Structure formats: C-alpha cells, structure tokens
Length: 234
Image (tube, one colour):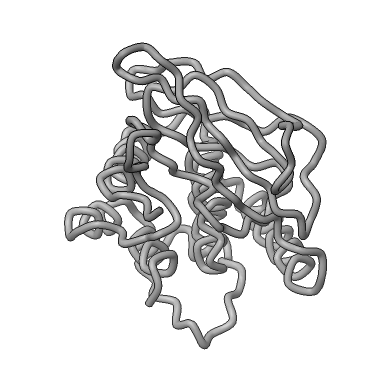
C-alpha cells in the first residue's frame, strides 16, 4: 500500500487496494464509526510517512523550510491549489516550468506555528502544464535565500480528470442532501482525493476548513509535524 492510500486508510479506516477502482463515498458512509480521527493519530505515532514528495528541505539553502503541499513532482487535480508550507518564510512564487520570471507571487505572513496557507488566486492553472514553486526563506542571520524550485503538474485533460469531476459532483450532491457541515464535507472530500492518490487535493480539503474542530486542528498539526520531521530528498 503506498503512502497516500496508507494515509487514506488512517483517516477513514478503509484500506483501498490498488487494483480496485475508487468510487465516491456515499453520505451514509460519512457516518461510519471508522470515520474519526483516532485512526490517523494512531498511524502518525507509528513512524514517518516515508513520502518522498514532501518534507523538510536539507542543505544550506533549505534553512527551516518544510514543503507540505503540493509536493515535489506531485500531480494536482484542482486548478487553484492551496500552497502549504512551514518555516520562517518571506514569500513564494510560481513559475511555468523552466521559465525565468514568475507569473504569480505572494508574501507569507508569520503565524504562531509557522505554517503558511496560501490560496492561489490568479488565473486558473492549465491542465497538463508543469509549474514550479520557489520560496524565499529567512535565515537565522536575517538574510533571505531562495529555495530550489519544486515542480508539480496539473492533471492533464482527459477521461481521468473528467471522471474525478463527475464522481466529486456526485459526492457533493449526496453530502448536500445529507446536510453535512463544512468539516464533514471536507473530511469526505479529503478521503475521496486520498483514494485517488491526489494527496495535495486531500490536504487542500483538510486545511481549508475555516473553523475546524479541536480534533481537526490536532489532526492537521500531527500531519505537519510528521511530514516536517522527514527530510525531502534532493
């Protein structure tokens, strides 16, 4: 079982075999007793994620930067991704792969936990295009150093992308009919994306809840802690 499916099992208590085609969760399944936070806490206490897409940057340029999402080399379904980072950071910028100038940038405001959540608010990114994120990192001597560029690709147009859109619409309709609250919807959508090996989209769902419960806050903190305890490969 790969890392994304392992995390999905931890969140929902449902192991998804690689050979099984994922299906949208029904609203009834959202109320399963396994759909809580204890399983993911148990998973996180068992060791590192062993996910080569994300983690703390090593080397002199990395400083205290931790790349959470999108991960290095990751495929992302949404065309308006949420950028998740941790560290003493000044700003971030997006580039079309191998281009010299960024097409979007944003300052990073310091928070108590040094976790930055930046919603990309430019023109929708293009399916099939590879983008790169570069972060300006503040060092202990107050100098600023650029990180390396971290590439991610928006899922190309085609049958897979269209099927995800249709399945997600079905799930959202079922959740609306069941009158689920924002947090329950976010957790259901996170599991939906985890099942499809789309971790960045799953993290976006989990970290976009504006008024999270104590359990969700604890879960998000545990995810960040576990991810940032591992070193991102060069």
